Image (cartoon, rainbow, N blue to C red; front, side, top):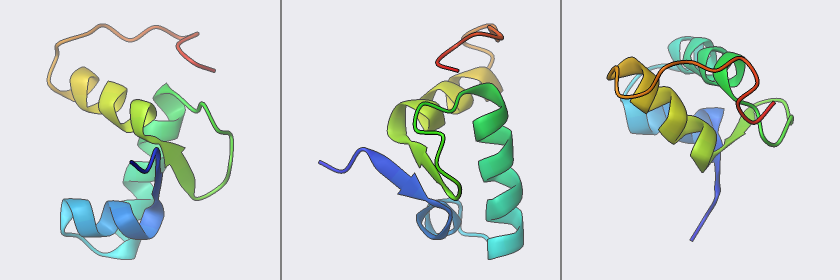
Length: 65
């Protein structure tokens, strides 16, 4: 099972263009950035970002940074 998501994969997942996917990747990484690799996030970073957007968790500044 793959644990990383690239910007290209994010564009496919969100069914959007690369510009919007890059914007969303920056949003994800602003909340959590386990890998600290440009253009790629960990699956857990994405999942945490989704939970925040759904209002299921409260943002913690030090989460996985």
